Amino acid sequence: MIVVSDTSPISNLLVIGRLDLLKAVYPAVLVPPAVHVEILALRRFSIPLTDYVQAGWIHRQAPTDLNFVSTLRKRLDAGESEAIALAVEVGADTLLIDESKGRQKAAGLGLSTVGLLGVLLKAKAIGALPLVKPVLDELMTNADFYVASALRQRVLQLAGE
Image 1 (cartoon, rainbow, N blue to C red):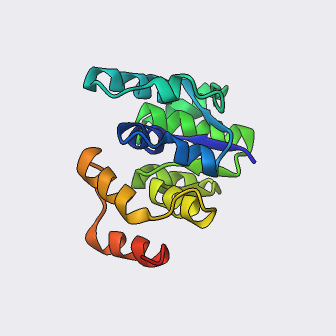
Image 2: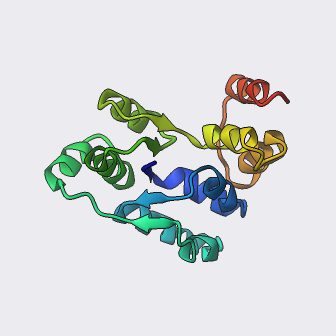
């Protein structure tokens, strides 16, 4: 399975010290250079990056179609643009991305997307996470991860909580 990630799923899990959940669901993840740079920029907020830097299961790979990246950059940020371009190039099974504009563009290109909430639900489904609610609450409190009330309720319903 080929999985490409944008910044948000990795960075938010790093903030709460739960990058292990991503590894449990996706044992190999590709990140493009712009995503790598965005994650490393978390150092300025004193976010520990050891789990990311030492993650042998996260691999950097640059997209080769720079014209496509440039076209995407007209509407999306650098990380999203490179992640989408890389996902298209490598025929990714899944693109991990949270931002709605990026998800819409990816879906329009035929990519299957999963956001961080989907990662949490998958982690619970495979037994890597006993309860979604405490992790979701921690993301919303400590990582400033915004989840609308109705979506939060739906996710907890899907998790059986």
